[in-house]
Amino acid sequence: MAMLNATDLAATLETEGVSTVVLALSGGLDSMVLLELLHQARQLKTFRLQAVYINHGLSPDATLWAEHCARACAERNIEFTSRQIMVNSSANIEAAARDGRYQALTHFIDSENCALLTAHHADDQLETLMLALKRGAGVAGLSGMALKRPFAKGKLLRPLLNCSRQHILAFARQHQLRWVEDSSNTDNRFDRNYIRNVITPLLTGRWPAFTDTALRSMQHLAEQQQLSDFYTEQAMALCRCDTEWQLNLTVLQQQIPLQQDLVIRRWLARFQLNPSSQWLQTLRQQVINARQDAMPLLVLGGYQLRRYNQRLYLEQHDTQPAISCRLCWSMQSNLTLPGGLGTLRVFNEQGPGRLAMVRSEVSVVFGQLSLPFKPADQLQHKPLKQWFKLWHLPPWQRGKVPLLLHDDKLIAVAGYASAVSTKLADCWLDWSQN
Image (cartoon, rainbow, N blue to C red):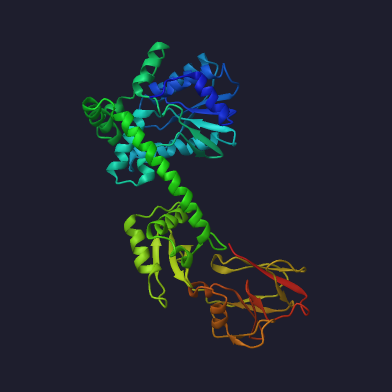
């Protein structure tokens, strides 16, 4: 186990390039020890130090704890701030309080040189492992809390993570620190308390080195996770399309099945989606491996996943009915489209993605896929449906594309092609989608 040392803490802050430290201060033993260590470290290295107390409103003693923290900071000439948050008591209170606390603390981490410090220690790490085992977590969950990770606009550091509570308590007594005791810590109805008060004493009573060896295993798992992340990121780069909302299934299916799942998880995590193993199996069976002529759809959270032309599409869940309207447009000013489908704009100059047009009275319609159309650079007319196939536009998106008609003839498909040659154009059409 690591020892508590202000010199090492100062060196860590310097190595991490931290010039502003925000301490999550609860007034309990662990955070009071970290407060004292930071106070000592500030004598060795110059940095701005601020302590923040988050009042969850869950204890009648919360105001007294805040006052205790304020006095401790005043004695050390440390900037102190208290914030009140509301916690949803109908949810998992432990998780809701944690999420609310971190959300409140993000506002204080406002630059890359700013770090949030929390006082999590080795015993907390062991409890995290037990909770991860209980819920059947994977490698990432079983590797526990990281010593450091990105947070808000800066980073989060846990400098006590390799220190035991025994060492922390010894430090507090040596420096005659005062701290508050949360009576809820003895309430074994909470999972973490049950592990701390009942399970851990049994394990360490039988095997005194259990915490050390468990942490060593967690470190091995963390290293395996780093290796997995490295190769998954490489595979992800191969599977990327021209938009983050799509995956190339031809390339994805060249990976081994386990790597495929990891790539899909990494892709979905970018949208804060965390599917279960059962859901991934359903995705493979019903969407990825569906018949080529099928139109599979799977829902996850507020999103839909579909497959078309060997691409996997992720889209926000669409409850809008098909657009069936006819809009008159003089092309003199921008036209806002219904159903959140964006805006048609006309420019006097040519630009990337803009279509050649002749300014006139037009009608804007949707979904008329049987209309004949000939782009200016093509030789023959084809039904619009065939052009959409050639442009690889998924069928479910085709009814949302604005179609411009002049004298009931299709002259432009917004975002794709125009029947007007660039030589005849006197304006240029752009479709900006929301």
